[in-house]
Image (cartoon, rainbow, N blue to C red; front, side, top):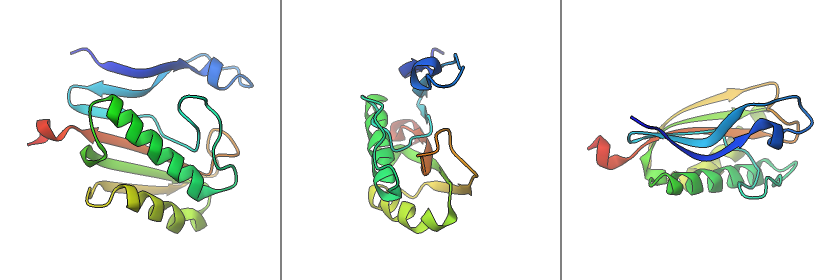
Length: 139
């Protein structure tokens, strides 16, 4: 089976201040399962940071990214089965989960939340990792 790679990139372009050279992508479609790269408050098209200092705005952008990438993978938010949320401060939990809850109303994925000391860039406050399975395959 060939996996479809969505929005490939190299880390030397996305993290020019770091000495990295890794070929990655924003999503991998493996059969009917879609694995998304952890999404943060960064515009997918411009790589501009969104909502610096504002965890709600960063979460909103991450959810926009998730919906966009799932669409590119021919899936929807309703296909999400697993969400992992990384927070740099436990006090952000309520805000982040309220924003996510609006986007995932009626979806009922399993979810894991973790508090970490930092994300890849200091301005990022939340990262959301998603696995989805197209429902046509799951029925």
